[in-house]
Image 1 (cartoon, rainbow, N blue to C red):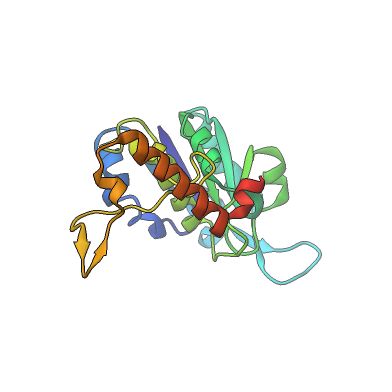
Image 2: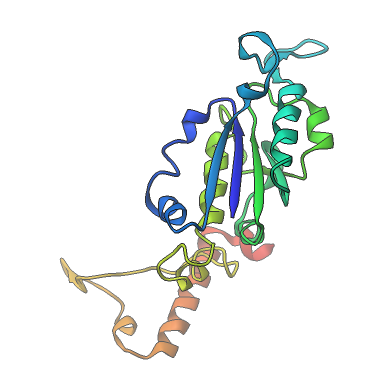
Length: 225
């Protein structure tokens, strides 16, 4: 899979993909992440990519021309399955969406900045708008990193144990159950006996019940959906 990310501040995305699972995915040749500097595609002086709003109002707006130049240039090299704009008014990102996007070959993400991007670009180029939560960030770079991590870890071969992703929270519309490791007795705090039973059927039933209980207590909205 290839994920291209257009950004005004590409240096913000150097670290998230240079370590841990994302680095492993890149080293295995399973995921390629390219961060593109939008300023390389502007024809304006001093690498300008934003301007004042028509109609007045606080905050600058990313101009349509540099964005179109960048996307059309990239489209000459590859066809994108989705062109995604990271924005607070997009659909809320969730595990189901991550699963769907992980089946694609080429994704392009647009990181907004300032007051956002020219609506005409959204109307004519964006195929999917995504939000990672009901709050506002300084730009879309951190949101792009979140999407890339959530999608990339689902690619076959990225995780050492591929079944691990299948038991993550939200995969079955439940939160993950409690987990324990050694020592089995720490300061008198013992792990549940069922986990030492060796009876996989009982263990799975216990985990399912714990996941259900945790979801009811902490995220009943998931069950309501």
